[in-house]
Image 1 (cartoon, one colour):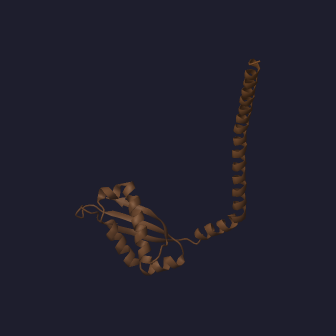
Image 2: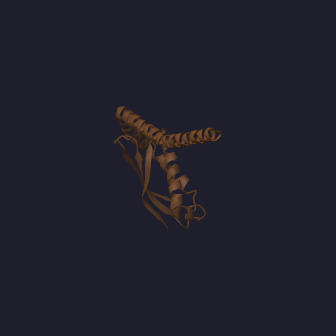
Image 3: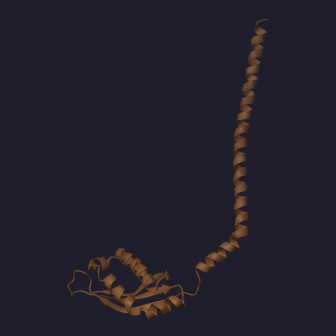
Length: 167
């Protein structure tokens, strides 16, 4: 008789193990289904938000990148690089892409001031710095800031060296 309660205990333990194993498998599958459900809900919510707000976002982005850009030219600017004692020179032309016609007319009125500041800035660099492409990009950034200051507001979108001869 004492063997029967032990047998019953073993049977109960085996059933508990089987139950916990099947629950464990269900738990893994449940987690996968839960995560899949969460991802699908997030994707649906993102689609709904984009579907509702995209026209507004596109309108704002389009207004920021208007097609009314204009170019302003500084032709044949000549400077002596720093440290050359007049033995070397740089001749360059600069095309400035501006936001609108108002910025162009303001820059046109202040052309002498802008050209003087451009010459002063670029002549601070040595010939080797002016020859470096990396440094040239930094100079373009500084020129953009300088021209914005002359105009009185942020209007410069980009600058292009259309001529660049260092002798």
